[in-house]
Each structure stands twice: as C-alpha cells, then as structure tokens.
Image (cartoon, rainbow, N blue to C red; front, side, top):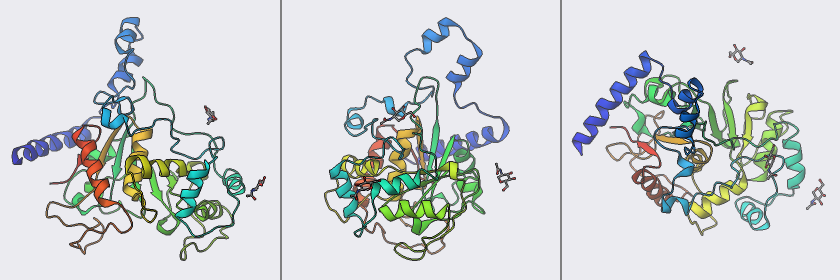
Length: 329
Ligand SMILES: *[C@@H]1O[C@H](CO)[C@@H](O)[C@H](O)[C@H]1NC(C)=O
Ligand SMILES: *[C@@H]1O[C@H](CO)[C@@H](O)[C@H](O)[C@H]1NC(C)=O
Ligand SMILES: *[C@@H]1O[C@H](CO)[C@@H](O)[C@H](O)[C@H]1NC(C)=O
C-alpha cells in the first residue's frame, strides 16, 4: 500500500515536471491522424470510439457501467429537448415549494438570453476530451495536483471554490463552474456556468441575473446581477438530474437528492472521454473539510444527500478503472 503511494508520488512528480517543461499532446491518436493522412493509419484507428490513449469512457463495455450509463440522456437543456416527461416533472416539482410559473414560458425566456443549441454531443473517433472534476475537499491541500489538474481540456469546479492562493494544489484554470443561485459567484469571461436547477425559480433566476436583475431572493437573498458571459451559460437538464438520482443512486426518498459533486461527476462522464477526479472525500486523517476553510470538522456533512451510496459508487468507478480518483497523500 505504502509502496503504491510512493510510486504514485514519484509518478506525479515526474508528470508535473514534464507538464511544466514541455507541452504534452493530449490526443496522440488525433495528432497522428492529422499528421499522416494515410489509409493504413486510418484503418489502424478505425475501431477507436474516441482518440484517447487510456480510455474512451462512454464506450466501456463493463457490465456494471453499461447497466447505469445512458448515453442518450441529455446533460444540458436545449431549445429542442426541453420537454419534461410527466413523472420527471412531478419528481422535480417535489424538490421545491410550489411554483405557479409556466415551465414552457420560463424555458422560452431562458433561451431568449442564452444559446439554445444542444451541446457536447460530439463524441467520435477524433475527439479526446479529458476532464478534471475538482471537488472542495481538504485532501487537496499539499497535494501539488495543480499542474495535473490544469492539463485537462475541461476543469470543473463547484460553487465558490477559489483558486487564488491555492494554485499549486488545485490549479488555476476553470473552464466550467457548477452552481445554483444560493451558491453563485461572479465568473470571468473564459468560464462556462452550469446551473443546477433544483427548482423552476432557479431557471427564472439565471434569466433575470443575466438581464434586469429583478429576482433578488430565492430561498434567501441571492446575487441579482451576475457577472458571466451569456454565450457560456448553460443549465443542467432536469431529466439528467433525475437520471442521476434514479439510475445511479436508486434513491427512493423524496427528501434526498444527489450532491453537487456527484452530479458533476456523472455530468463529466457524459460529456468527456476521460474523467479524473480530485478533491473528493476525506483527507488521510479522516477529516472532512473544504480546502479553503481552515476549520476542519470531524464529522461527515452529507446533509440531505445520499453520501454513502455516492461514495460507494465513486469507489466502484475507480475500481473498474472508469475514472481515476486522486485522493491526496
Ligand atoms: C436538436 O437539434 C440538434 C441540432 O442542433 C439535433 O442534432 C438533435 O438531434 C436535436 N435533438 C432533438 C431531441 O430533437
Ligand atoms: C403555458 O404557456 C403556454 C404558452 O406558452 C400555454 O400554451 C400553456 O397552456 C401554458 N400551460 C399552463 C399549464 O398554463
Ligand atoms: C476577457 O477578460 C479579459 C480580462 O479580464 C480581457 O482582457 C479580455 O479582453 C476579455 N475578453 C473578451 C472576449 O471580452
């Protein structure tokens, strides 16, 4: 066990140094294909479902995985996929207090502000999209994962998780920030916002927050005018949230729903070819806290979430080599 950790450490150090000094091409197959437009090469790579060397997640034939993974579930709301089947609408309504808003009106308003095309459904033999899902766990502190995280195509962060001052451990790039109104923070112009709509008001809020700022509170006072690039804003599909709830976690209770971290992990698995996970779980002393808060708490705060099943599922994904879990030292 200890040797494993040591070897992993050496590997990480070498990898970090390499990344600092040379630019590693992330998709060697794609690169080759671009260089050599030769039918033999074409033939060699013909069967590849994606251009990654290590894995093509969505193409895995692991039985445990294929029983859960549904490629056809849309991760992001779009103009032409926004209909909600009745049972899902009901489930979604049960998460929130009653709203009188007309869903199709709310969707129409939303897509008058943000782009309505479908996104990220571009898997194929020439794509190798690597993604880092960065949680907020204190196990990131002292990890020196920063350069490794930054070397991914997409870097997902959640809520208000800061990078400034923590770059060596958490990296400095954020391509996507996942949040909901109550956890929102202003974004720079290179970051995509992925809104988690736990209620219909959350969708009304993002429309408002990008325009006149008329909605000032949801469950409590929230940012009314959000700094974000409209073209880079998207909303996770309620159908997708329901699928994570039902198919991945088999949650029966109405009062519990997937955590942000778990939703983002499954989201990443749907839009990326390779997913690596950082900053999930406790640190080596079994302490749970956020890397940006210096008051470790010695208890598991899973709140309304199904922490146990989520943890087991993440370990299973790691065991089956579908994701790589970086847990610090
Ligand atoms: C939505 O439109 C895209 C093209 O923008 C198309 O590829 C896709 O199949 C459509 N999806 C549905 C559910 O109609
Ligand atoms: C919602 O608004 C649409 C028009 O955009 C209308 O056709 C529909 O009947 C309304 N639904 C409800 C439940 O009021
Ligand atoms: C994005 O922001 C940076 C600095 O914050 C600025 O220099 C740049 O021009 C902006 N880019 C666009 C496309 O607005």
